[in-house]
View 1: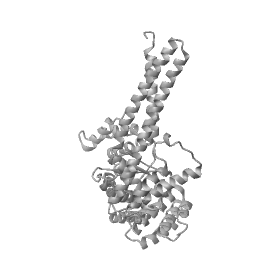
View 2: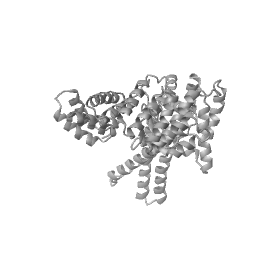
View 3: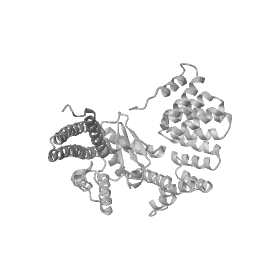
Length: 462
């Protein structure tokens, strides 16, 4: 044994440890791997609707005061996942779901993961799997070396088999555990839906969609090699429970369905174009959602004048809808009519019961575009307040920096630029601008301290 090279053995074990960790992570925790490079969506209307979907479910799950945040991901696939206290949901899921109940079922499932502490348990399971893999690797390495020293090829091969078998056993163990947690989250979702007087039919519809997609694609999947139960298995497990509920045939309120249809139209127009929004509602082309998608599609196609007429018709039909006024403001900005746009954004903000920071930032941007000195000072105030409500809305800091620069406050402009880079994840430039701003700010002032926080920031894991 003294002739063995310890460093080489350690390298082999470390490589095995890393491999099993990577395998487990890629199979059972895709959300963690997806956090880098995610394209996120910010929209006041969509965020408000999804919050309204989630709030009763979170209350039923005992998470109402837990600060759970819903994050929208710009992705066309039907998917949702949890990391920490955040539920991520793809815009593709929102657009594909034909009813609010389908999305509410998805949110209930994800809430089940958070309420059940599944993330921490998964980390514990990964730790156990890693230990299994390391033990198998050490035994395998020892057996292989012993076989080599004894010139016994069979013994050496059995050592290799021990290593690979141990890794496979660890991986399957984690996958099996994850399938169990998915089943638990499904059952928790049924409970939350029952508590809130909502149907579980949307969950069944979602799993039927998955099953149909797999069937049409001719996909054959080994059920023991995936982290989720197969769709048909999930349907079988939930169908009886869902149908036993007295709420099973309860439909979503018409007003909620209309809001859902409108955000589907908006997502389709912004992500897939005018034609996609029209296709979505081809069976009812005069519905409010279809007309909304048409107005947005016309705007995005560059015909602002025609879009103004279309959105004005919607405003006339629903004068208290804040999001129609918000969209009117966007269109008027594109049409080069900032004063009218500011009026539209201001009305949208006054009508918005949620007081969305995103709408307020739009208001500040429009005020700034008017070029009037008084409006510029008001723009700074609106932008600051809007950003306090939507702190991570990085684009807003760019507008705030421009407003400060026009007022001649260079230190504040550089600090706003630093914040914009910081919330965009561009920490290098954030630190550069924070340092530049700090040189111009009074030592110990709130701005100086914020700049210092950015300068001192260290990314987790680095």
